[in-house]
Length: 417
Image 1 (tube, rainbow, N blue to C red):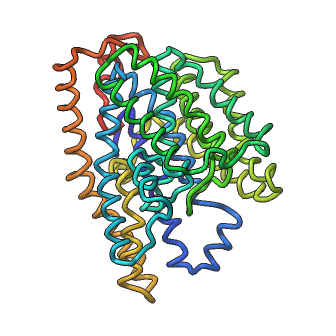
Image 2: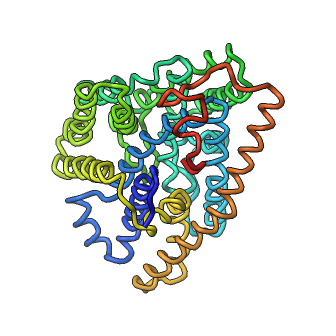
């Protein structure tokens, strides 16, 4: 059993990763018909992804306040995510070269830029590995939240969560799904936004930071106007894409109200709007999936609420251990499934055993040999940037409990956040 302030979050991440991975295994082990029979009543994939997004929304402001600066946050995020992401990308490309899966369709330059920025889903492109689509919304959320921190509007989380959900509810049918298309020009612009923003935060230039912070906040328009989805992705509309961001801000609302930064009434109203919007969105668009989506929304809210209420209790080490490697589990389980299914075709039980074993082994190796070294490299890069450009004083982020930036109550938390 594990006791720590973050153990319940690790447990949720581990649980969500397992749910998504097993959801993708279900058609192979149960058969397509049985899988679809379950899917028509409850979408376990959607459930796991939304749970992930709630956790991300809760964790990201904590990470920003722990680092105490946007430079440390962005360098930490890049070196936390990209090493495992590049490993998964290389693995996916090997499977494409072997002919075991199809590669992303579209203009090659646009596909490359979409993967470099992780914004491929909002360009209407499929990732070389199926679960990459969720990283699009993670990256968009980072850009928005970093911008809000720079402009000292980071405690407006309830307005963002409730406002985005209300927009989906009232204007969802009227939002264009592909207004900007997926052209090379759009991909180039978005690459400039991501690379320019990271550069501004890394060097600590006040003028560049506030300029790119505004642009980062403006990326909220992308899911509103271009919420097209690549193949195998959850969103099929801009309103659904907007609600995914609302779900992340809902996690932030929980974090804010827990630390008495927003009122309970405002938080309750925002969370209720997100819950209703998530459950009703598809029904409002085309009259379908009311019961299934509503049950998923309630189940996600209930799971997160139970975990939050039990956050001070000891958590089984199995779940916290799975949580530690959950990012690699999420990125690598599809490649492992493709290999297992190809090698052991016609033997569903054997595929299931190979999938579970192979995913855990691959994720463990990735975590220890790729993720952790990447995080250590990120800390060294931060030190080099501090030496070259001086301490990041352009935008100082106060800690939750009013201590010195970067050394307060969250200063000693693990880099895995």
